[in-house]
Image (cartoon, rainbow over all chains, first blue to last red; front, side):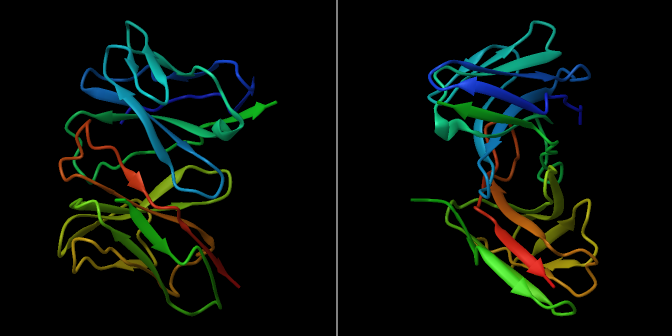
Length: 113
Length: 115
């Protein structure tokens, strides 16, 4: 699986947009980009995934560059409850159960009032 | 509500004892996974199971064992052979294909402390 690079930590003011970058320069054409987040002492929570096009759901938006070598997760109006570690992961489209997600260290997002 | 239940949330054991962590899901998922997380680290795969009565080793299976007798249950035993068992253990499940529309669903973990 392609590896990802994320900043170790980021800060965001409550109510502002949080933009979390991820580099995946070795991503291949058959790999999706997934985002998960983990609030302290809880299991990771799925946020969103995408292949080529930008995606949006009730939690966040995912912007993928045209060359697919990087992406940005956007939390449009961050709240204190969004404070968590955010993981960017790439995974083959036809991944079998054995090629389970490879989690790096992620980005620790701190939202403050 | 459907989900994954891990119990207990905190577990304490003496060194040399085997201990079993419970994981139950009512999502009707075929695939289940066990991950280990150490402080400040990402998740590492211990074991996974694609179907009942079948399971495969992950990256760090040594010192662990699992069983998959029922679709809903995937217990993990941490044996005395595991050199550094103190960690946060996470169970997850997904639909069998593991494809793009089947993200992993995680439980809230069991924090095991061995002294």
